[in-house]
Length: 385
Image (cartoon, rainbow, N blue to C red; front, side):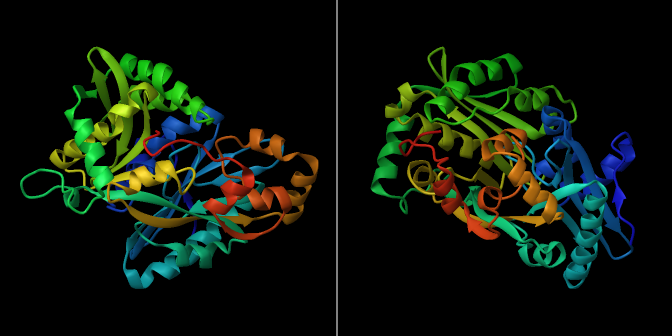
């Protein structure tokens, strides 16, 4: 079966692909061409939305071609916060066959684009690890996870948060946060989001010794008319001062991603983030959001992880699977460039897991091990975000 590539200048072709994603409860909004319009321009990626279909199934993948002097790569996730790769509609009994044929065709397509490597992520809701592994035949990768809250389970029939099963420390912190005179608002004004970005996000991430997200991600999302229904910004004010904000994105099936939350450190001792998350979950409950996705945590243990876990979050594993398509070119790349060079060249992209790039060692490592070896942990207490 021939591999089809969406012509992004065709509204019809884009809508065909996006409707398959939007109709899928387990798919992320980041798998649509709508998201490609937001993230692809930042680093000059070329979206390659590929699919196959017949009378029995449709299978597609949102991929991005990143060209550079060190070596081209075809990846399913670019920039921070991207999730999901494959959308499949068809019988369960046909799934392995569909995945196998599609991924073999996708590998051939990546080779035709002179790619050194290609990486796909599995779906934590679909659990499609096995069919991707069989069709892609990855030599290396990374085990990671997301953390989610089923929104309805967080609230009782009376509409109040269920806290009896939470720790005493959680109940005390939530009570304190809700007793403060904070004000919660849903904001659509670009200038307000920009104020949050400049005064809270950049400052807080640098305090955590991290790298702020590019402003272009938020700007592109806000100014896109096609994406207008898929983003929300929740702000918290202390009097007239904004002290916290949470930029979220969601699909049409009630799956919302906490894309980026940043707050004022000065208000942390007043349990600001407990107030923000509680009010956000209430909004989700009242607006047909089924799942609140924290995404992952860095590190995958410690304060930030524990803060998310304290809300009764469920941990769902998934994988980055990397196929080295040209082993000689991959080895030459590692010899010709330093690790720091490659980190800069492939900023915002997943070339291969850290251990494969640094030492050439293949196989799968978990995120915790990779982060410890790479020394890319953030520090902070249980509320930091």
